[in-house]
Length: 118
Image (tube, rainbow, N blue to C red):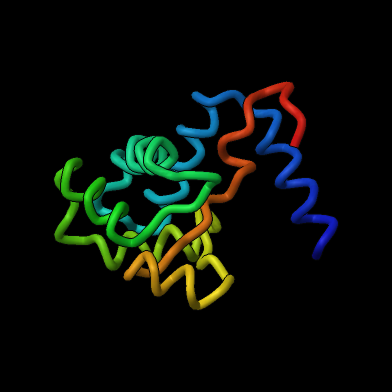
């Protein structure tokens, strides 16, 4: 299984941004996400808000509200985690306590440009 995941990640890294956005939208459409067309824009906005690929639940909620999908923020966070777009940041409780909200880490392979090193 690990080898399969490594190949998939390597394939994702060499894709250009437009193909990644299209693949992401299709994946969420196939999952039944009603706002699947918004997902590439949502993920791109999350990237701009993130620092070192880290983003808080409050930041995600703000971006969702800006895109008009704020009523589904909890479901979208679950879908983003389940799809591998992001995962809970496992770290010190002090960091989470300071943030006052859950912290997530965006999958860096989604943002690596074609030809860029991992």
